[in-house]
Image (cartoon, rainbow, N blue to C red):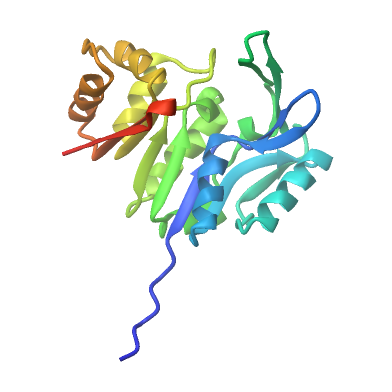
Length: 230
């Protein structure tokens, strides 16, 4: 017997899209875009929802995404602001320092009719903290989540000082079903939201219970990852 073809999983990564600029090269970046990129490699219909400048850096980002199987229909162009960049410098200990430049295109993401149509059929929407630094993009992210009625909502915390605050983190946790963060971010988030647990695992469990989350995912570098669910 032949089986009906299953509908493709539709994944949306919404937020920052940028170039990481190193001393000798540049690489495409942005946490939500990375999620969409890997989803596309696994066969999903994956959208990057962001905004780039009407410039050469924007052209090359769009080209890169398209070449790697991502749908760029929801990639907006901005005539007044440049494509986002991050300057990456490495200190003597080999640790990277990031300068995330402001007043760039992804700070001005708009909620459009095209975005509204796609989000109603999304399987999952992934968003983070950084892109909520601007009122315009924060509003668009919230509207997208509101209309994603059938989607799993994934909050990839991804703290980038100084672009986060307690209110944004609390609100984002209340909007998601799944939260992902690393073992350095877990103590920061726990303190901001008033959790006093002493270990990474107990803090993750307390966070899941406090916000009634389906899952808390904590990456731990060389020690692998920890997934906490019911």
